[in-house]
Length: 115
Length: 115
DNA sequence: AAAGATACCTCGCCTGTCAAGGTATATATA
DNA sequence: TATATATACCTTGACAGGCGAGGTATCTTT
Image (cartoon, rainbow over all chains, first blue to last red; front, top):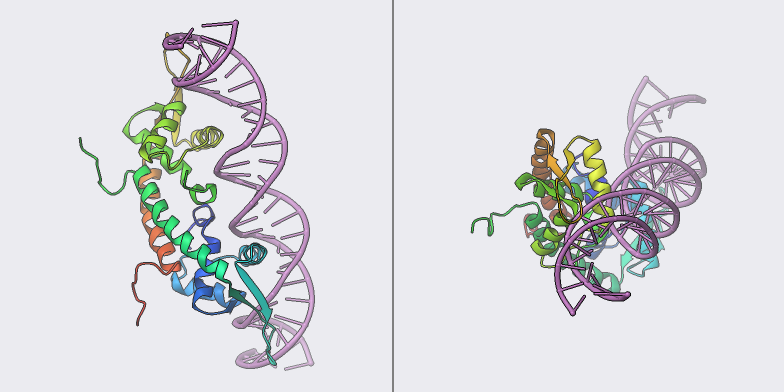
């Protein structure tokens, strides 16, 4: 594990949205996909994930429905809304800004160092 | 103002350290320099700044001393320690990792999209 | 005299993370 | 048969960092 929770804070929701943009999904699956995508460098804890689902649904960025599994444990699927897509696009742009601002504040990038 | 507090969380301390690497400084000055560096896009709130100073000093990443101003308000200067320099270098490396992981999780960068 | 800049500080609320605990189903293994 | 492991959901309560709101003191400008 590599990322601290303080650094990931603020990205939890966009990360979830980015998964739901590709396809409807459910908690357990998103959790595993994050692990895989990051080569185990980041694990979103279940409690964190589910509390984020609650916030996202309340904000109407996602909606949920029960899967019709006839076998195995039931799954609650989440689907991104139009509002969610827009929020995600906004988040992405903000992230580009964030990166450049933090780079500047950490003196990274070599831009305008001299003179 | 652009950065949210959730996104900045985890960067407050490295940002302060990056200022102190260049020169000893004090709260009010660091605060203004952050504003200038980011073209007013990010303001570190005073309460945030001072609580970070407390943490950093407790962790021995910085030390403080009173300036000898004979005029104007007194200033408490902060100086980065060797431990602080090392922590800062570590933070910087971690930030590079963080950026690439979040990029990946947000589907940014176009890397490995198509097999 | 009043306002604004410089400079410090604390208290207490709010919010997101997460350890710890729980439930239920299915399958593999000893 | 029991037990472990994987799948799948969930809640509670502690904790930590950000920050609004409030405070103090000095100096300069109007």
